[in-house]
Image (tube, rainbow, N blue to C red; front, side, top):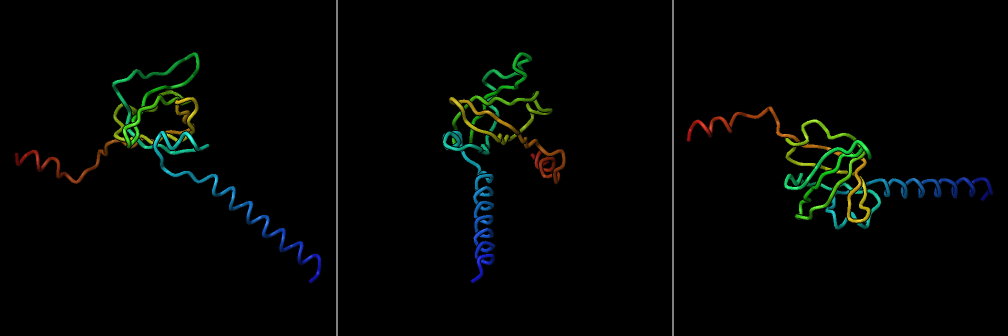
Length: 129
């Protein structure tokens, strides 16, 4: 074989391996807070714990609140942006970030709010009662 061909094959294999490694590190699965402690980037699904203090600090420019994951673990969440609209109405939250010192530092937050569109079955059930 020619040296150029061998070099090309090795380059392609190296590039593909590096690409797959980076892709694998960028994919994050849904985990609870305990599992997030061992990861650099995590998606944690849960609900807002409205029994604990929450608010936006103008000094640190961060919104902080407590969230309960699907396994019942409650952790403080720090979000570096103002409180999202309809935060109190959200039925489910997904925070994306990492755990540091028993606090989840979120880079992004997704909210699932109750739908204003429904099939009307709730209204029919209420009228039948």
